[in-house]
Structure formats: C-alpha cells, structure tokens
Amino acid sequence: MVSGAPAHERCIFVNPVPEYLLDSDVWKLRLCHSNGLHRSACGLLLPYAWLIRSKSDIRIAHDTGLLPTDIKFDTWTAFIADFTAHVDTHSLHQVEPRYGYGKLWLTRLNTLYLFGAAGFSLRNLVHSFFERKFGRILAVFVYITVVLSAMQVALATERFQNDTSIQAFSYGVALMAVGLVLGAISIMLLPWWSLF
Image 1 (cartoon, rainbow, N blue to C red):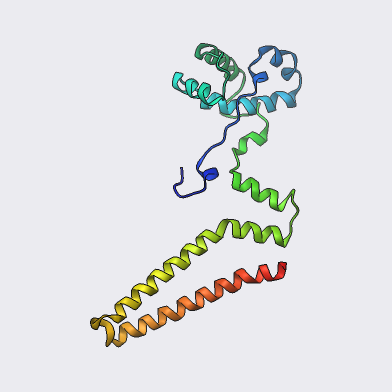
Image 2: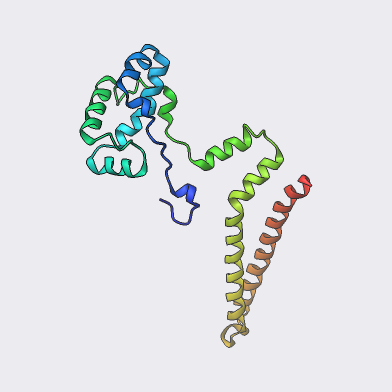
C-alpha cells in the first residue's frame, strides 16, 4: 500500500469468483468444448488458485464474498488440485494471453477511458493532467512559500542583516521562486485559456 495516495490507488479490487467456474458440469458441458472459452475460463480462475491457498485465505475469501460460504477448504483444494493438474501454471499455454499482463490500476483504466472511449481531446488531456498533478503542484508551491518565509525570518535577524552573501543568495532564490511560480501558472492557464 502507498500511503498518502487516494483510496483507489491503495487498494486492490478483486471480483468474486464467478460461481459457474466452480461447477464441474459447466466445465465438462460448455467450457472444455470451446478452446477460446476454456482458455478464458482458465485465465479467469487462475488468480484465485494462487490467491486462496490456506484455510485462513479461504476464511478471508468467505468474509469478503470472494467465494460462496458453502465451498469448504477441502472442496476448494480438491477442485484447485484438479484444475492445476490440467493447466500448466508455469508456461500458461492453456490460458488466454490477455491474462498474462496482470491487472490494470484504476487510474490507468481511467486514463485509457479518457483517451480511448471518451475520445481524445484537449479537454480530456487537461482534465487528466489537473486531476493527477494539481495536488503535487500545490505542494511544491507550499514548500516554496515555507522556504521563502524562513529566508525572510533569517534576513530579519541581526546575524544575517548585513551579510551580503546571504542577502545575494536570498535574492537569487526569491527571483527563482517567483519565476518558477509564474512559469507554472502560465503553463496551467494556457490550456485552460485554449479550452474556453
């Protein structure tokens, strides 16, 4: 978990196991007769085989609704043993290739949506940028403010009032901070101005 990140970036969302994947008749009558369906079903079930491996895992799976409560540990282990006997968990050649890429973070899915399904536009680009980066930009402004305030206090003391090297340094930092802030504001206002 990443501290300070939004909740959807700190959590992993896992869907419940589709109950039809736990039915051996569905496997025999439907899934095993179609290579594409079988590969997709194997890819969908494999993460649960890796995720639920002990009695404590199955208790958590029951408590969180990942597995139906009528599936006991012995039933689960027998089912997964049979499943892994038919699926090579190392090469994954019986698994649909799209399941080899892992999960996508919600922020990445949102970005893909903004640039894909929602259609690419300058408005979507600006919205995505400000949604993600505005907090960081604001934090940088706060740090600049703190540094400039500390330098102002230091220059007000008798020790540094007549020190020309500290005053020159402070003057340079202040000009650099003003330039950085004005540049950042200009960069932020330019896309907004073009949108409106």
